[in-house]
Image 1: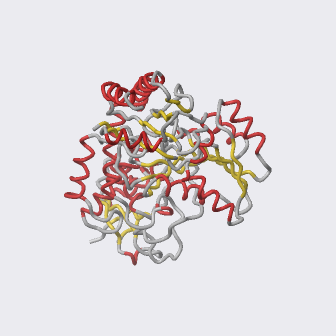
Image 2: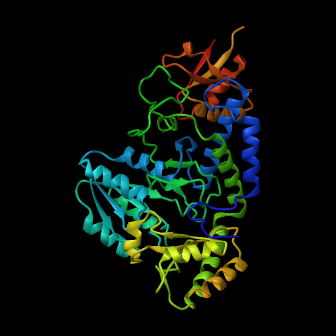
Image 3: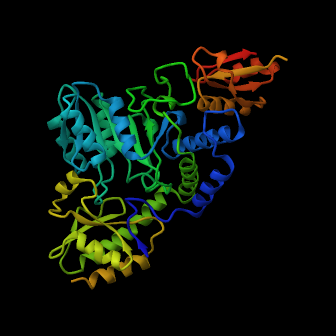
Length: 374
Length: 72
């Protein structure tokens, strides 16, 4: 089998990740932060260790301001709703995932906020678009750093500079860029960064997180027990407890803790470089196959190539590749805005998303199989 | 026998302060505190030798975590 669906969930994981999940379940999977016994305290220590490693990976000095969620969608919902005030105007990009578009649209439908969509492109084009849309009540920008359907990226540092200069909050969706982009969040220009564990960080499904760079104690989305301040009917005001109600996914966080060790050992730069090389090889080969159309600029960062076929729907190509033991994803990838931006048309696209464990031989084999598709 | 405990708001803060104290060679033991010790209910603390409370205060002087050193 050839696995090219890493933008949905990376596979395989580093072998140490599988071992640590098993060790966690066997040795220290008490309920973290609830009890006095060793299993509970060891689980809490492992979770704190993961906060520290993530803080280090993202160049951020406050591990306790990292809150764990169940995926990036939860993280984005929570980060958005903590930072939105009634009557405010929000700017989102034209490559946002439904994890941002849907909650923003719902808030607008409920009459709480208004929003506008700025264009992706070069630094100048993005800032020009934001400048044309900004209003006196604009308080927040959301930026999907790396698109989940093509290699389109947003100039996050430029947007961060703009947000800081205009007193705006900035939420970065780092779902696809985490693990391949070297963030340095201590500059303080990004208010919150959201990501899942199970994509480029090589953790497992069921864990996401928010790095609350502004250490904001804002509105909560989920309320409940956290093991502290039990007599208080309100959620704690301090982080991470304010946003972490209910039992955490300790085995998933333990997996992420180990996965981050793997990333630090290989380095974010090396992983990104390898994915780019593989992507370029695939895109180059794909470009020479008749009737294939590649969407977006494949020269930008990220290990994703989206394409279509002149005569066949993306779902047909996806099925053909699955029949040949090649795992890709076809359709709209929960990103109708981005598909509209790249002009993919009916049926979306076929997405090939590469990971660190893919090889040149796999690229060449997939290209050979694709070239036989008529 | 009297024990001395650095009481904090959460297990996360307790682990954070435990690191700072350990770095100063202060012996620590993380524990869940009796809820009656605080107004808000369940919380965590770090037991330290009562002879080291001054050193503990010094080790924690720059932390942003709210804490109290209790003799219980």
